[in-house]
Image (tube, rainbow, N blue to C red):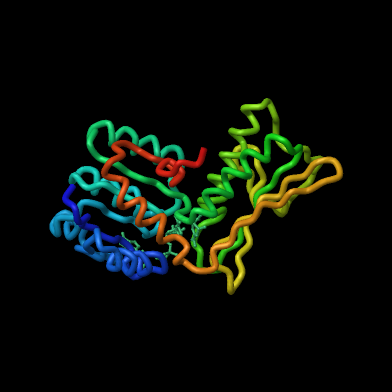
Length: 251
Ligand SMILES: NC(=O)C1=CN([C@@H]2O[C@H](COP(=O)(O)OP(=O)(O)OC[C@H]3O[C@@H](n4cnc5c(N)ncnc54)[C@H](O)[C@@H]3O)[C@@H](O)[C@H]2O)C=CC1
Ligand SMILES: O=C(O)C1=N[C@H](C(=O)O)C[C@H](O)C1
């Protein structure tokens, strides 16, 4: 990779994509070589000499976009949601065929959100009950949020490591789904409210006490330092990195 990183942004007219375009244009070590919207041909990315493709599109398009990038020798930084285990497995297989290429799948680019997941996972080892609440703007297409699903899996893994099972719950009847989604045995609740951007709260309970851990993104600028870190780092990290924490020294 040359000193100046050539970047293509996919989903460039969207809420995140338009912010990412501004961030890349403001970064002295980056050059925006392509800004694609829905319907634009992906060959405008390698055609413009991009080193890194940033995918901020929709879950239905993201996997194909990343496949194109990897198969055409470009690294990928991905904020789009919907990357379940099946998609991640297919991507790992693809990257084995392209050993010099890096892909970052980041459920959340905000440092506060990444730390929230870590803090919640640690705390959940010590509390009998834990539930995740995510709150977003009403234009969001998917629920639960990718961040909340990722947090739930981090919590479940931490609890398993100390032999803690699911939270106690005597519910016998829930025909309307009022107890929310269940991700890896952790209940996840989704709120959609005008005025919100992206928020997550983890509630932890035990006899006589409660701990709440909360993060609020009030503005999408909160995601941009993480996007830029991803662009700067992905070329030096071949293979799949799932979560921005893979590029941070959090221990
Ligand atoms: N990882 C993170 O920190 C964050 C992730 N997100 C996720 O990023 C994604 C985008 O979110 P928003 O910007 O709010 O959505 P948005 O709907 O505002 O923007 C998506 C854009 O992608 C375009 N698009 C759709 N298919 C495309 C394709 N094949 N090629 C190029 N462009 C295409 C759409 O026309 C739209 O302009 C969502 O999955 C969201 O959950 C959002 C915020 C933060
Ligand atoms: O759609 C959004 O807005 C967001 N999507 C991501 C998610 O689903 O976790 C990240 C952040 O929560 C904002």
